[in-house]
Length: 307
Image 1: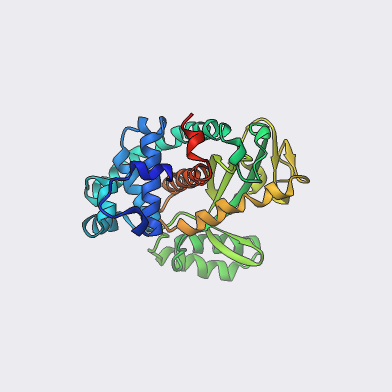
Image 2: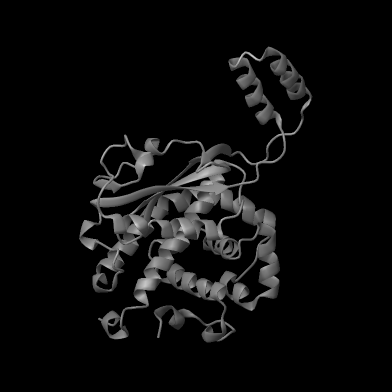
């Protein structure tokens, strides 16, 4: 029996649950058994945010799922209004960022006792000495022409000494009233333009994410602020960063893409400014770390866990 099923007392048999519902069962198991997560002051908000991410929905939609889905109702236990969830989430973000690192350490400690069942990518003896650092772009709606865009065009016209065009742009800037709702930035990658944010993650050989940093999309990779001791396996964008390792452990390098795929799968424009975007990325990474741990746990014989 998978170990999280013992903690499931929901209204629908586990074998009849959908993949999303099984994710809620796994997350309920992690919330109950984790010493770090059990210390959180507002577990309901974390549960509501997990529902938002698994269903890629808004604050308002959480109520609809609570009223129409018996498994979601079992997982949440109660419901608060959309405004209260939003207000409490803004207060909650600092606490999640603080405890995220402790949660990663807790999972590493548990997985150290299951070293025989880790994936082939895991070089467990290198935990704490070798890290993967990579970046992923997440997009948000960039909107129509607005004051920010016209200001940049005006500055560009001045630098290029196109004074007539600059005068026209200045006129439109003064008349323009629209402002961009999402506070992202433009960047270009592989000849395609993106608008949004850039997520940096630091991952151990066990594929557990330990640190996250969210910046605007045009932030240069080699200025990321991870200061962990040891070597970082990176791509060419991080050239110039100290303690980097561009060659070697190529198979380990590939596994970092799992987090990027997971992030894009569950990402939607949850927030308009960088602080709250980072908060939601932390919650997605928390779910990802739980996935990695439960996937290892599912391979462990029940007789070994009994000891």
